[in-house]
Length: 138
Image (cartoon, rainbow, N blue to C red; front, side, top):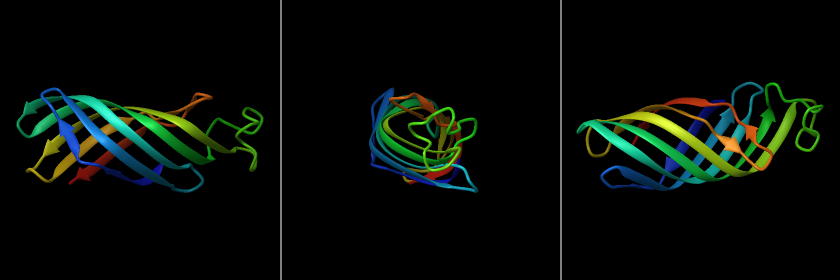
């Protein structure tokens, strides 16, 4: 977990479905916790409560890389990925990220998004910690 930046391509929207073609996400570590990079596409459902507020449920699919001190995982537990020092692990591979969020659109260009993401990385089913986020979209 840490401070991050997410950049996405323009979003294609239909009546109930949306598609963010390309997403790039970088999370920098705060303290000794993990750093990550992910590149994925995201498709989801959106429901408008008012013309300016919507609920989104989506799934991102792509690739990711994670490195750092991961709570509850030590070199005794995962000898293949934790070889830098005890508790410092490296994971990369297929990336799957379910997400739910609320979006308030201020106008056609700016929006505030609040939500939670639950990134998972495979093939060894490493459960990366969930992420709570607040962000402005342009």
